[in-house]
Length: 353
Picture 1 (cartoon, rainbow, N blue to C red):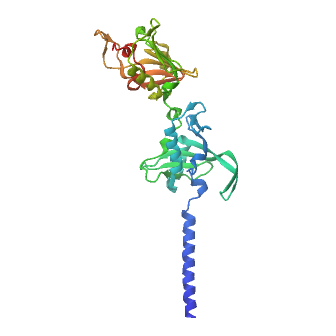
Picture 2 (picture 1 turned 135 degrees about the horizontal axis):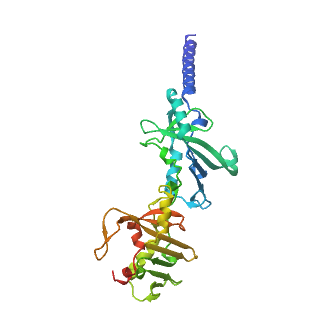
Picture 3 (picture 1 turned 90 degrees about the vertical axis):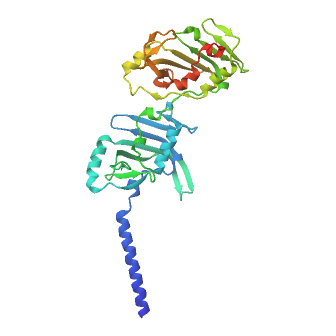
């Protein structure tokens, strides 16, 4: 009898402990449907839509080849996309927003929050996560991204249609993730100007409107023989530095600009610069007949500049310049450090410089 009583007491204690754990868990466990902001399978993500309260919108789409496009038109920075997908996979809820701050956070988010919609390929039929049939694209998550917390270690987020915001972070990462949800197209665009290997180049023409005697054109035939022609008299140059020519032509495999400027500079200024005479024009034609042309303009500077004979010239930036790229659609900032490799003069190849 005593043994049964002891057993009963032990069982009762265990039941009370289990009940306590269940009740505690009921109050502390986050509802997954309103707090799961992360994406477990980022490889299935096909499209991401981002928008803010200032009417800025951007659509990121995965192509059938696996690369990404911005607004279905421009190549995206693959490294930036990869980093963002990793963010979507790594974010976790740190805690719900404290009750005393909840109304203020929601009110603030109604004014400044960014919205994200994430689309994934999911099966219409999924049996025990083993048999997956009839894949289709589906909107799987929609949520809002707000301010950062006072300690700069978390970001406020809210699922669409819900009333309880959460503080989200990446475990082990010191900082906040709000800035990674950019709605600026310029932040996602690829900055490549030229990416043509030498074996795909048909011709390269470099012109200097203020110094036409320095202009030239390289022509490469099917046998990869290189012909250099002076443009001022259309004469073929017989002797040139082969190593310098090869270094010049191979540089076109990776030339990038520094930043897009259309969203940072007034249109009137861009139109004024674009209508002026460029200092350099580069025109590359590949073997498919596609033409890629770049017009480069001086950027005003503050340091005095002098000509070869010592005459004072209008100051211009010695490190950077403006350029029109992508069929003159984009007004960008470039670095001479990068573009000097593809703006050599004729004298550089003939040994006169």
